[in-house]
Amino acid sequence: MSISSWPPQSRNFALFFFGYYGFIGVFSPYASLYFVARGMSATQVGVLLSLAQAVRIFGPGMWGWIADHRQERAALLRFAGAAALLSFCGILWGDSFWHFLAVILLLNIFNSAQGPLSEALMLACMRGDLSHYGKLRLWGSVGFIAAVLVAGKLTDRYGIETMPWVALSLLAAMFCASLFMRESGVSHARPAAGTVRAILARREVQAFFVSTFLMIGAHAALYVFYSLYLAELGYSNSVIGLMWSLGVLAEIVFFYYQAPIFRRFGVRNMMIGCLLIAALRFLMIGFGAEVLAWLLLAQLMHAATFAVHHSAAVATLQRWFSGPLQSRGQGLYFSISYGLGGTLGGLTMSLFWDTFGGRAVYLVAALFALAGAVAAWLSYRWQTQREQSIRKPLLQESGT
Image (cartoon, rainbow, N blue to C red; front, side, top):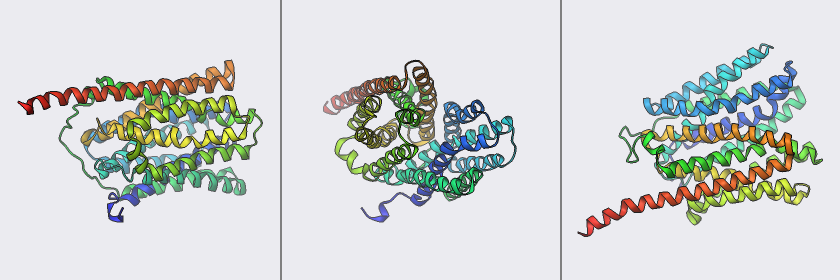
């Protein structure tokens, strides 16, 4: 495929994803160490780090509504990026819990705009052609790995006080990329699918969001408990870090080859397949993690359980949320899946961890994924039935 076939602003989106997911790669592993060094207790650190998940429940949907209402997604992305950058500067001073609470709350409110708005802008530029979606999105995974490795080296050599500076540089890169982003393909006409309320009233859409809610909820077993579970089994920190890196490398490989794979197997088969693979993966971790070979294989499955699922979800959303509803569709996806699903999944897994232990957590995660596969199957089945019911009168009318 020729270079000219790449969507407009590709370099801007690649840099943006590098900075966005790179910031997560710095903040998620090292923020807890930074806050402890600044005198926070374990309970206070837990509250501070839980804010991102809590804000995801309402933040993406709110920003998506504002963006679609004003039809100024690029300008809003720049505003949120500048506000997130300025908010995070507050972490450099102050040593009280309430100070850090205000800083992290503001950061997450503004940062919750970045995911849905950037995805909506990129999808508008692609105009329905997702051939290069994976090759642009993989730069987020590259940024995550690079940031984890660089921040690890710098904090080991110069101390944990360097963490905010690395994170600020990535927020700045993200903001700089947004300065060059422009609106593309925004239609002010109402799409054929109707209003957001009408779309959400459809059973196939509800089943789709139930499926993504369950899938992200299941992944709380990884994001919250994976490192702790492997440590309990006797794995070293080096091996645990290797497992995380292997999972991200696997998703990079998939994102690179996403377009031909999706053309070969189709969105429906990829979505249902990745949910079934997720169930198998969680069972392998829960009941076979003592064997390193099984653990390695389970981590390679991250290509399916994250990268395939995210790509299939984005492609499916394009059926209903396009044009002036694109930002709200992405916002709803982030809020319902990563916000509600991630938060409630984490709470559920915590209860099972405390009561029954690690294996029970991964058994519950596998059941979540299986239930998600059923919901996805129903969603695509009802989509097909709806399309057939619409097509049949049209065919009859054209034949008369």
